[in-house]
Image (cartoon, rainbow, N blue to C red):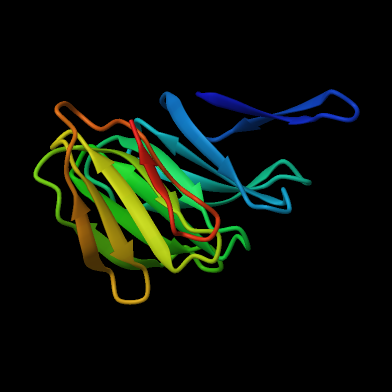
Length: 165
């Protein structure tokens, strides 16, 4: 089974989180550090209770490996990006899929959420990023200009600046 670790930095204590049967390639924390999400080649994300070091639930809806994941600052929303060409917006309270974000023509390799959870950003091998409205799941803008695959993206806390690589 694939492992992730969380570290309590003041004490340098490591907690091993066991749950994915395949490689874990991304993870994120809520602003208060109580909730984590991990993304795996097993096509799932797992939500974790960090203080207790236990799995809360698996998020299952993607048809291919999950490449990246993000959490809103308050931990109420999660976002996953997959090689199936979609991002999925989830509610962490019950693990329900809120919106499947479709708009890329190739694998989605990166994702980000604004701190308040109102905006999502996805990065794709199709050389674009897409800015999404999380309330209705609709594309706000396709950001073009890359000459090769876009593998990662980030949003500033206020949602006014996007960064991609």
